[in-house]
Image (cartoon, rainbow, N blue to C red; front, side):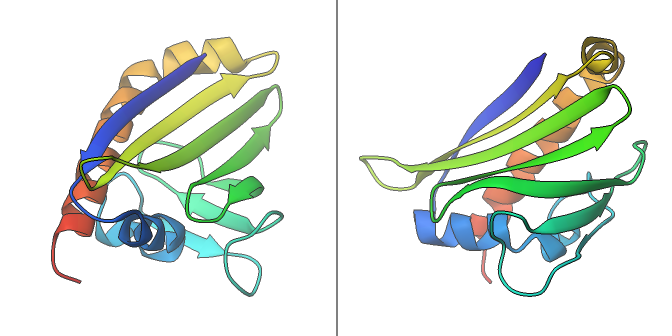
Length: 141
């Protein structure tokens, strides 16, 4: 089960990428994240691990499984019977700005059950994150 939201941001892709990959500061621009702590030194890269705390959700450890610098990254959290995949894509708009797609999918034996259980919350979180990202990228640093 996959859920997603797309938002157009009036900022260059470099700015959007800077904000998206500065994961330890996400709590400054979205209420859906209490904290993110990178568990490895250095910049975000394939294999990087992060511990994420979110309201109303269990704390999770995500591992970056894909990263295309300046364009997208995917990270995955696993729990018994559930695999949560979160993808963050940014593409240049011909008229300027950046189109961002945020998506979350649940898979595994319990993935569809968890996806349905958290469906409304996930929709609200994706919308809030998209709005917060746009405001952060379009606003002053």
